[in-house]
Image (cartoon, rainbow, N blue to C red):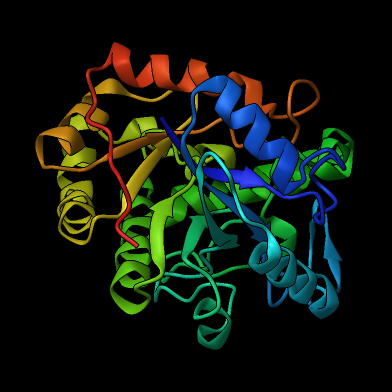
Length: 285
């Protein structure tokens, strides 16, 4: 088994137990023989500050520490790759790590941590509610912001928004060879569902048509589609499978056994892939 998305203790989101020796020991116990231990990397935050909600601008000293500790650790029983989890920023495919820093690692795990800037829906920070991380939106002012945001997504058009996200992924893969995996996107629509875009107003047939160019590119470039044990429309995943996309299971591990995102739950993601008969992908480094 493989898991290309395991967090390292240096980041605030990961537990102090997430060191290379501990990760290797737990992976072997779980049957994981190859993995990537990632460091969060963000060149900037949407608000232009050091911190934004749950995310933080990369501290250069911590980045160097991660690289040094990776270089000095010698795994004994598994293959461990270096990598970052970073953000897709816009429809043009910009990502939140400079090209010169990408060259220092094995792979980039590409995520959508905040709504990307789309041609049809330009980024306006205060109108990008993520209810998973912003309970403050439950107050009256927050509800007004949410309603304004909903209206903007309707005006932009749900189909256009899906097209914009797909374009962003495609452009990033074409521009940056280190992008090897698309992280926790479920059936590809999770980033938009998270930001209250009513993607289900678009038929599954049309959604698949929009996503097929991304699926074909991922298959061609060997970019894996990461899945956790979470809701995802099986029709979309099965079409990607038919087009040759390789899938990878992950617990998005931030802890070993407890807390948020325990590595222990990796097997649940593997079972989810098995339930849909999805092929496993293996990244070529």
